[in-house]
Image (cartoon, rainbow, N blue to C red; front, side, top):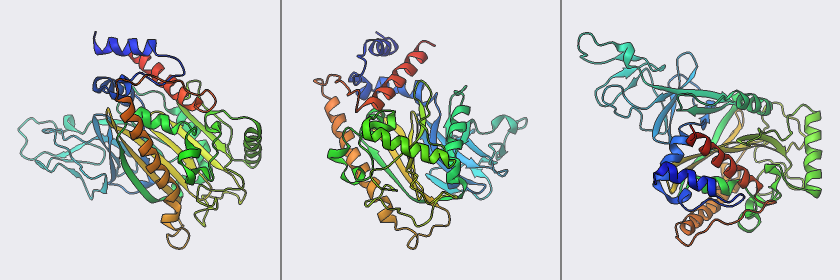
Amino acid sequence: MTTTERMRQLLLTRRAAHSLPREFYTDPDLYEFDLENIWHQQWVFVGHDIQIPRPGDYLTVPVGLYSIIVLRDDDGIIRALHNVCRHRGSVLCDAASGSIRRRIVCPYHQWSYEFDGRLAKARKADAGFVAEDHGLAQASCEVAGGMIFVSVADSPPDFAPVVTLFDRYLAPFDPANAKVAFTSTVIENGNWKLVMENNRECYHCKSTHPELSATFPEAPLHSGGGDGDDLIALQRMVDHCEAIGLPSRFEAPADRQFRAMRMPLLGTARSMTHDGEPGVAKRFGELPADNIGDVLLYHYPSTWNHFMADHAVTFRMLPLSATQTQLTTTWLVPADAMSGRDYDVDALTSVWLATNAQDTALVERTQRGVNSPAYRPGPYSSDEEEGVIQFIDWYAASMLRRLAG
């Protein structure tokens, strides 16, 4: 049986509302299918436009097997360039971020490129060499609410609905006038789907996340669930914020690939800090003094995010191998907020740094368990793990569509 046939059979015979068969979390061949049919076809969150404010500023990001330079060109356009020299294939940029003064120069033989990817100079090229034929290969690039997404697909999915939704929900936060307060990158020894599954439920939060659980509801409101007093509080927050012009209602397509909503934090909490009080003395944009809760955004396969009045926390997940995933967390604050005066970095980041460490341990524990031949797919709770069911259904449907051509 070929790998393609095995993948199709596993998807068609999987049990609904259950975790996936062991191979999906462990098998290098199925991981390659994930890269080819998910990560190399979908839009992937790579960073924020405020991280590359000037021409020549760049990020380098691994998108599956591809290395991408995300760079602002001389006209202010953000581009996604493949990090591969057109001469003999050398990697051009090694750093995770930086600033290039004039041109992208290959460190091997000094071929140089303009910021828009055009080849500027190839030393001692033969007669008849056509520079226009040797520019850097480009990937597709879009910005939604200040968040940069890249697709390496030849024909990426329509991204306009995501741009429309994210722009609308994030406009009140004035993302162009934010700045990065702190960034953390960790490597989790677990399959990327285990990382996303862990994020899509709070079934485990009360027992493992004391810092987060002080302000974040355990009820599955973030996946469209919840009942009783939780739903009453949610509706009260949504109605209030919509009335003052802040987009708030749960919005998602039928397949739940992306979503935006506003959710109240617990009790009187106004921010995800240890005491629920704002961690930053400033507010984004011209947001009102009211308690406006937490705007949650996600987009499969790579990102989930929290935007509060005083700060935002964004997450970028990228697969590195069948059993390794890179997670980058970024804290954003208003651009005029000063560290040491308007916020304390340690206090601002402590809740999610603790939560990330706890989640890393959970993901790695689960990976060790599913590595065992004794593992069998277990049932999800339709109340507590509806978000996980939505993600796995999206993943399976996406893979089957790709396998069907």
